[in-house]
Image 1 (tube, rainbow, N blue to C red):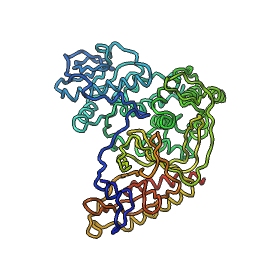
Image 2: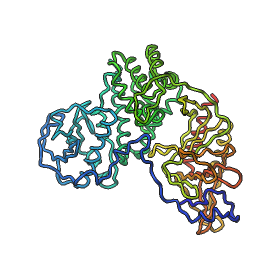
Image 3: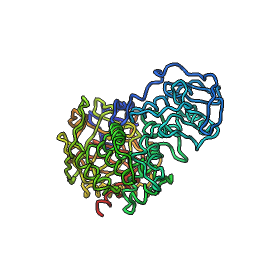
Image 4: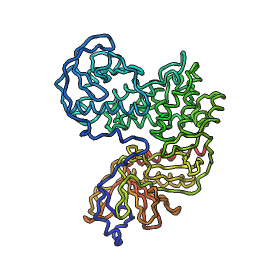
Length: 561
């Protein structure tokens, strides 16, 4: 565990100053999660106590399956959904939890799409949509498209139930099937004729599955041989792989149901989901998604595949309130008609909704290209705990992301496109970037060389289990701390670090606590402000450091091509 003096560079044998001595006893153990974060709606993360009484199985009802077989099942009723199971001898609390979760999933989809599925009489009980556990349906699960009713095969329900029972983890199938029930956009977005592979329809369900699970606050169960977190990261990363491969275009991926190679051998449905992830991240989060699906419904029915592609680009641009023509046609290599380009140019808006949510007016966003000079760094403290000594210990879930471009809008509505090498610490759970460092290429090359040399030295000379009789603790994953005490904090809870800070890397961390010297085996990456103060410290294992190095190399290479 990090202590307050972990921020200072401590050389063995030196005396720490008074500030550090006072801080060493303080253990940063409490992390405060964000409230009302931009990309997830906490209104869906209800406390179990708010979900009323423990539910019990009702009297058997007759249910007609999608394959027209009549079976007897026990209902577990929620507010919007009713789970139907063959057995009534299931744990009441677990079934109550599951029913409450899928009630909130229904509410999330309704909130984002602004619509509800068309009710079908054979998939409704007491006005609630059925989720029936059956022995045979069309795949692991099956949901009516745009209409009520989901079925889940018994083995997959067992996986779901046992995951909740033993680990409080939810298998992903039902979250995906809700994406079938809440798909209302086929006329506008699905490709036509022989091009209709279902990739767009299914890609929507793939993406919205992740959004729903995030919104209701459940932990996902494993997917094949990956953890759910790894699964999501692989899907999100497809767009990066696509962008880095000059031979890949819309024509040889989405059009023919193909995708870049990945660890899970994913296809075009996942690639479409990855594009949606990127749009959501860069253009407004959850609010962007609400605007996107609303704009899609305003588009005319597609008569050709090009119409469908145009509809999506236009809707995305209007939802983002900026012209995304260049993004889609040049960076992502999608086809776009001249008529669609002209329409977007006339209609896209830079106006941000006011607090009163007044209707937005539309105008073209002005974009200014800027090259990063030197290095600029900013801490974004909210939503984390900042101690009285100005220390912020970041959660272990943060990870590095590296990009070659950074977009930011100023108070006048001008979009600044910063070209350089940008390091982001990303906290996906809070949809937050607690550290952003923008560098020019020479500065990034210097960081690359330092990190590469440190990693190589680490590989050649692993630490002993003890150094000078002090036990060595091996770091796994990544741990980061920010020190803000000497700097001014803005009203937005941000700290702009001085331009004099520099990167440095080490093969071991030495520190002190009230119990003695601390020795930690890690790749240590720090920002140094002068010789004695470290405003930022990151301890990584070799795997994490190597991944960061590879990403830095990738972006630098792209800049040099």
